[in-house]
Image 1 (tube, rainbow, N blue to C red):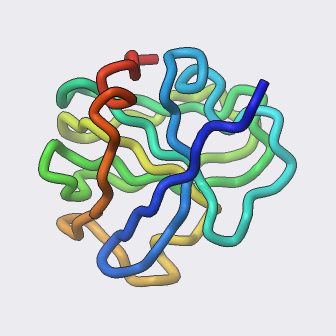
Image 2: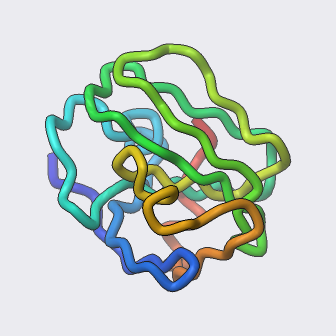
Amino acid sequence: MSAPPRIAVSVAGHPLRPWLADTSAACSRGLMFLRSLPPDGGLLLSYPEPTALWLWMHNTSIPLSAAFLDEHRTIVGLVDLAPFSEQRKWSPAPAQYALETRRGWFAERGIGLGDRGAFDLPVVRQSLVARR
């Protein structure tokens, strides 16, 4: 199985190159079983429309922080995720995207609610991503 593609993302002007979950299997797998992330790594999950999203850390050993972004790519929620926790962390408002990266990445850069993300998703991939 090959690794999903990495895409260019900017959040409040700070660059990242997360993997794009472009199949329902990739969305379900998330960052499970990885032992480390590249310094600019993470995972961008894309959904067809805004909805209540949740994340968990089933089989994920890397401490993460995640941003929930609405259809305008504005951050509507930020959460920290503990390794192996199966507690669901919900978006506080409807979100269309979830961006996971190493724990503290958003806080270290002063990124908060209302900040914006910028990225271009291939239309074909965007239409293939299913809700996990």
